[in-house]
Length: 181
Image (cartoon, rainbow, N blue to C red; front, top):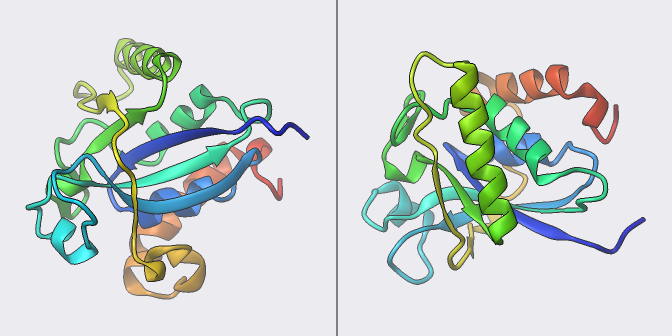
């Protein structure tokens, strides 16, 4: 097993959904829910949800690039959220739910931009992709109760109605890439 680790930081709506999916992928070592892209230090969930901090709900994914590539992570990312809706995912509305890729290297930036160009050219959605591609900033881990939220709260109504279907979709489409698969 390689000791080479990289970080990907992605925003695609509620971080509970993203964390639940990325946690299951082979090559992913850790997924931490948190906040990035805002203008205050140490934001809280309540402040971020008020939409006044400028932060997005993100997941920071630690992964082994010899087992899963950044492009593979982006393929999953674009499958489990709608990248064509500005500042919203379903009923979650506000800049904190924007679609964003916070790159950690020029290579990640290039892969993100190429992936978006490829997907736009394929016209998978009726509208153009609005996912922002921006340099990673300070990452703030979310409060402890947000970590592993879906695993710890599978019967919570939001988890049953929103998170579980995204996890099921990812499992069916990326079966060969699952840790259990």
